[in-house]
Image: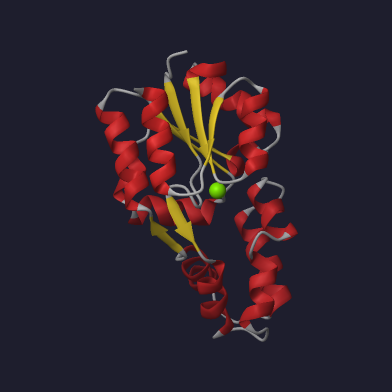
Length: 200
Ligand SMILES: [Mg+2]
């Protein structure tokens, strides 16, 4: 079936990230060492609560501040927490080329308000998608089916009309269950070849 929408995961697909960078910056104003800070913010239960909209940004800040003994202000925290991303230019070029062909493109991401604010301000590629589906705006995380249903509604596509790229197998498998075409992203080279083979 012809692909009518290409849905990209954000982290490790369009941008790389490293919470170690944030942990080292936060450590300069904290009682806890960087290694401990990283464990608090990187793919931690606290981060999942925040990205699943179980906590507000201020609640997340206060919870992290308490755990790591951070002495700075919210703005300093947010700047350090968010400045962890680097663009993957081969993949953002792919998105731009798909848009050039007239194909709608979407971002479907488990993410948070601080990260998205930072990415929106600093990465021009980010503004050029048809629409965005973020876990923190819907209170549901991949691979829960709810966020896939929302993506179908927003894209007005379903089943094999949707091509989805994500680096986590559990997330692509949830797409397969809905009949989506999926690519489990490992490298830009492989994903680009696979996308063009499906899109033609
Ligand atoms: Mg990812």
